[in-house]
Amino acid sequence: DTNAMLEEADSLRLADPKKAKQILDDLDRESLGIEEQYTYDYITIYISTFMEQNLGKTIKRYEAFIKRIPDSPAKVRAMTSLLGLSAYKGHWPRSFALVSELTSLMNRIDAHEVEPDAYNGLVLFYNEVEQPDMAISYAQKIFSHPAATSYHQCIALTEQAFNLAISEPAKISDDDFYDAIELCGAVPLPYYVAVNYNNLLDFLIDKQAYTEASLIVSEATKHVEAIDFKYLTASLLLIKAKLKVAASEPEQAKQYALQVLEADADKEYRESLISAYSILANIAAEQQQYEQAYEYEKKHRELSVSLYNQKVTKSLAIQEARFDLQAKESQIDLLDKKNQLLSTESKLVKEQISSMLLVIGLALLVVVMLLFWSYRARKTQKRLHYLASTDHLTGINNRGYFSEKSKAILTNAEKSESSVSLIFIDLDHFKTINDAYGHKVGDWVLVKVVESLKALTAAKGMQIGRVGGEEFGIILPDTDSIAAKDFAEQCRETIQKIDTFDTGSHFQVTASFGIADTGEAGYNLDNLFSAADLALYQSKKYGRNRVCCYQSDKIDL
Ligand SMILES: Nc1nc2c(ncn2[C@@H]2O[C@H](COP(=O)(O)OP(=O)(O)OP(=O)(O)O)[C@@H](O)[C@H]2O)c(=O)[nH]1
Image (cartoon, rainbow, N blue to C red; front, side):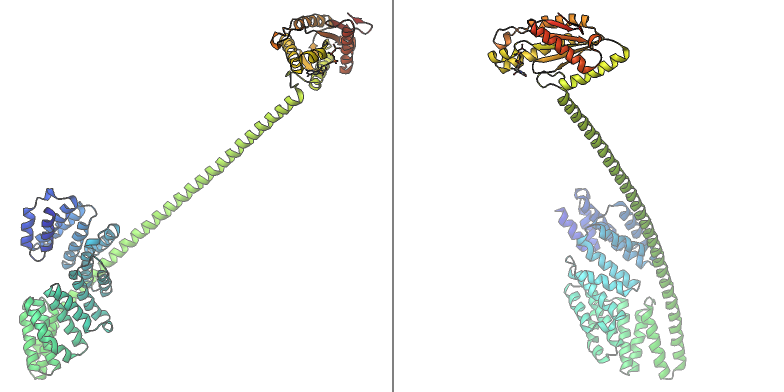
C-alpha cells in the first residue's frame, strides 16, 4: 500500500533518514494522490537536510517548494521546517516574514493534523529570539490541541517550563519539570529528558536549593551521558561545579570547571565556558594563585565580550527584522484600510445610485399611475357622457343630447345664414304592435327603424335622435324643407319596406313625418321643434304614413 509506505517514511524521517529515503525510492511518486505527492516531496527535502549537510541548498529547496505548491498541510510543514533552518542560520528578516506567512496560512486552511508541528516550530523559534511570552502562548495551543501527540506535548512542556523559569519563575515548581521528564521519557524522547534535567538543575541552583539539586545530580548525569551531546554535557558539568562551589568544595568545583573547558574545546557553548572561567578565577584567587586567577579572569572577560557582541548583533538583527516586519504589516494594514475605505465609498455610490433609481422608479410609477388614472377618468367620463347622451335601446342620441346638437347646428347656421331642417318621425299604431306581438317585438321594430334611418343619414352631416318612445328626430344642416321632404319620403319608404319575418310575425311598419325648416320656423330650437311637431300632428291627422311640412301660413301636405 503506497500510502502506508509514505506514512512510514514520514515517521522515520528524523529517526532514520536513510531508511526513510529507501522507502521513498521504492515508492512510485506518480501513483500517489496530489496531496500525497506534496508530502512525498516535503519528506524528500527534509531528509536532504541530513544527507547533504548543506543548509543553504536545503533552504533554497524549501523556498522553491513553498512557491510551487498551493495552500496545503504539506506547505505548513515545509514552512515550519524552513522557519527552523532560517532561524538557525540567523536569517531574521526571512524568519519573521515566515512566521507571519505561516500563521496566516494556518488561518486560511484546515491544517488540523499538522498544526501541532507548526506550533512546535513557533515555540522553538520564539525561544530562539528570546520572546518567552510568545513561546509559552504557542506551547499552550499544543496542550489543548486534539491532534497533538505526546511528542508535541513533550516539546511544549519542556519549552514552557524553560521559558516560565526565565520570565515568571514564581509561577512554576519542580513538578513542572518532572511532568515534562515523565512525558518525554514515555514517548520516548531521551534528548528532552536530559534537557529537562539540566533545566531543572539550573532552576534549583538559581533559587539556591542546593540540597535538592544535589539529590538529582546522579540521575541527571545518567540521562545526559546517554545522549552524549557536547552542549548538554558542558552545562551539566558546570552545574556540578556550581554545586561544589556552594558546598565549599573548591577542589572538586575546580575539577568540574576544568572538565567544562575540556568538554567544549571548540568554544561553541560560550555561556558554560564563561561561567566555568569565572568559577576557576574565583577559586584561584581564593587559593592566592593570583597569576592563574588573572589568566582565567582574562579568558572570562574575552569570552564575555565576544558573547556579548554576538548577542548584541543577534538582538539588533532580530529587532531590525521585527521592526521591518511591523512596518511592512502596518503598511499592508494601511493599504487594507485604504481599500476598505474605497470599497465603502463605492458601496456608498452604488447605494446612492440604487436609491436614485428607486426614486426614479417611484416617480415613473407615479406618472404611470397618474396616466392610468386619467385614462380611467376619461374612460369613465366618456362612459358617463355616453350614458347621459345615448339611448340604450337604439344607440342613437337621446332627446337631451339631440336637442343640444340641434341647438349647436342652429347657432352655426344662423351665423352662416344657411337653412336647417328638422324631421320628426313617429311610428304608426305602435301601441297595437306592442299589444299584438309583445313588447320585445316592439323593441325589435324600434331598433330596425333606427338601423334603416342610420343607413340613410350616414355621411350626410345629419344628426339623428330618439326624442320620444316611438318618436325620432333628424336634423339636416344646409337643407331647406323641400330637400328635407325628399329625404323624408326616402325614409318613409324604407320604413314601410321593413321585413318583420325575423320576429316570427308578419305585419306592416309605417311612420308619419313632420318637417320644419328655419326658413319658416326661424333659428330658435323650441320653435323649430314645435313646428315639426305640428307638421307631424298633421301627418297623423291626415291618415299616417305620410310626410307633412310646416308652413307659417299653412301646413303643406
Ligand atoms: N316596445 C316598446 N314600446 C314602447 C317604447 N316606448 C314607448 N312605447 C309604446 O309606444 C306606444 C305609443 O302609443 P301611442 O302614443 O298611443 O301611439 P300609437 O299607438 O303609436 O298610435 P299613433 O301614434 O297614434 O299612431 C305606447 O304603448 C308605449 O308603451 C319602447 O321603448 N318599447
